[in-house]
Amino acid sequence: MSRAQVLDVVGTLARLGLAAVWLISGGIKAADADQTYVAVDAYDVLSKSGVEVVAAILPFLEIALGLLLLVGIGTRLVVAASILLLLVFVAGVAQAWARGLLIDCGCFGGGGAVAPGATQYVQEILRDTGFLALAAWLVVRPSTLFSLDARLSVGRT
Amino acid sequence: MGGAARNDKQRRQAEAQARLRAAGISVPQKKKSSTPLIVVVVVLVVAVLIGGFVLYARNRSTTPAAAVSPSYTTTASGAVVTAGKGKAVIDVYEDFLCPNCERFEARDGAAITAALNAGTLTVRYHAIAILDRNTTPVGYSTRAANAALCAAAANVFPAYHAALFAQQPAEGSAGLTDQQLAALAPAGTSADFATCVTSGRNAAAVTAETQKAVSDPNLQTQGQFGTPTVAANGTKVNLNDSNWLKAITG
Image (cartoon, rainbow over all chains, first blue to last red):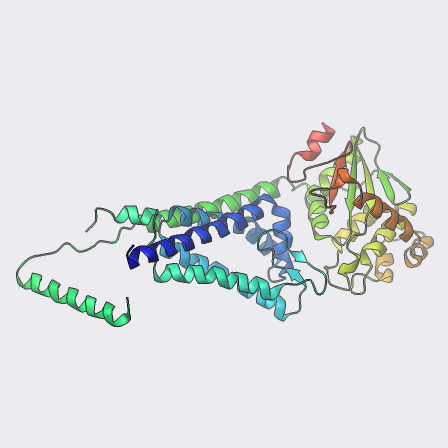
């Protein structure tokens, strides 16, 4: 196995991993719209109507990113969008932490207020950082196996 | 591949290109396809549209909202307030601090009130306190549930129930004081109401009702009791089905 092939395999795992993250988190959020509303509301950043809009669109945006990564089309672009969204999440958790709010991030369902001492801001940010690392790999080296990108470039010189 | 090796490779490629050009041979350049960009943009736009449609559909089904004013009567027994006289009966379990309960009332409250007014529905409101720990000082859930039962005794439950959700404090806050809870009642409410609120007359009944609800397996999802919970004929109703109330009242 050549070095490029090994790197392709690593990239493929990163791509499919990130796809799974988006599909699962988006799917859970889409299935329980009220819980998603409560989770977004708990960050205490947006107005009521802003929370409505974000809570309605976010699940489907995550699912879309997951599907695009799954088939592997426009990988670098989709990953760049993923990084943007992840940074927004990290910023949301960080501001909640800094302001002393007592909330669950609602990253994979759940969300809303939690009891004092039950917050997990460090774990939540570390988890997002892990996802950002997967994304960073793919931005630098978006070439992966089983991707539409690879198929589309076949036959081109 | 190290940076130096990469640079070296690029330099050699450039030199090869230059030699080919010099020899009059044109090499077709790798063209970037715009297909992926278009696909990505289309999929993301579709996702946003789906979200927008979901939002629109949910909001449209709840527009009759605030307009419905309650005209039904209530009776109270223990920590259960029975509203309306309809044939279809549902049990509603709410904690007045629970944000999802506020969402539930905002979306389905008007339709429930309309059905109660029309006499097609009976609602047994169970005053539940499972979020006492989520205020500082603790205990807002029990104090609010107690106040709601005081309101039922004073015959102002429908308006007071609505006011508790309209003025719902955030989780993690101090909640409303007993004085603020007493002041939420409509003007002309009996003087006994304020005494009932401040003395916590129904607190023990709320605790008992909460324990009963939490330990009822028919009200649990995956072994957990949460609020809001609506039950009809002893089984839990799926509130994510926007037709749940119509299915019950017919």
